[in-house]
Length: 81
Image (cartoon, rainbow, N blue to C red; front, side, top):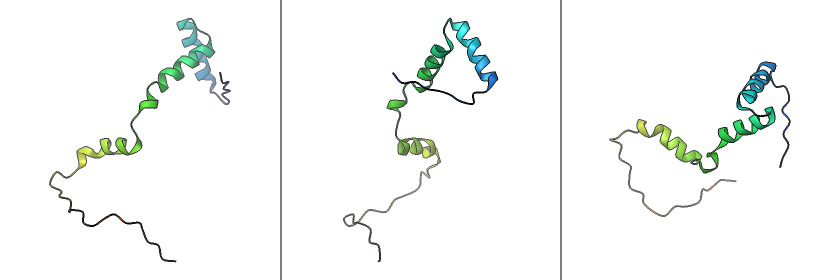
C-alpha cells in the first residue's frame, strides 16, 4: 500500500474532516480513504476524451449538414523541407 502526505491543507478542511470521521466512527485517515475511493469509483471505465467531447456537443450539430463523399485513399501528410 502507498502512503500519501498532504501538505498545506486548510485548517477548516481538516476540522471538517475530523468531524465527518467522528460522525462515521472512523479515523481521519480512513475517512480520507473512503472519500477518495468514492470520488474516484468508476473513473477507470470512463469514456475517452473524444467520446466526451462528442457527447457534449452532439446537440449543437446542424441536422441539415451534408458531408461530401470521400474520394481516393487516405495519404500521409507531406511537409516541405
